[in-house]
Length: 113
Image 1 (tube, helix red, strand yellow):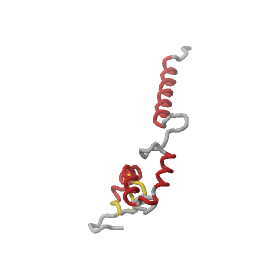
Image 2: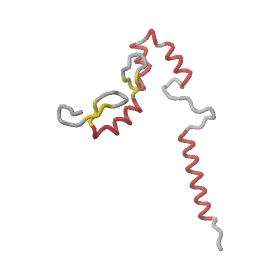
Image 3: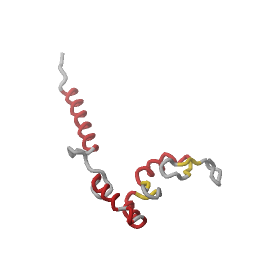
Image 4: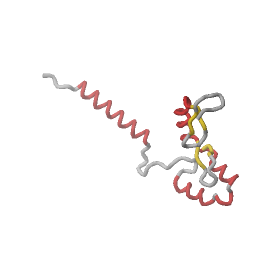
């Protein structure tokens, strides 16, 4: 598609807005990270304002949604940690440190022939 100023645009799969094609990669990352589609009306709402949107816009139908979310997350829009309590960042860090330690050990403790 072309916008009014002749710039080529692409429709975002997440928010369904026309975005200039040079900005599309950055927009996709931002859009997927910060926006959430309302389960009731289909509007795109910032994640940090989702509960406020539900309460202000859809108050009667929202109680079961909040109860479901409370069971899945910690109440701040974040997912619960895994059962064993290890986050992905911490696991990645541990793997990297272990790899570096093995590499250094293999360099410093080589057998001399």
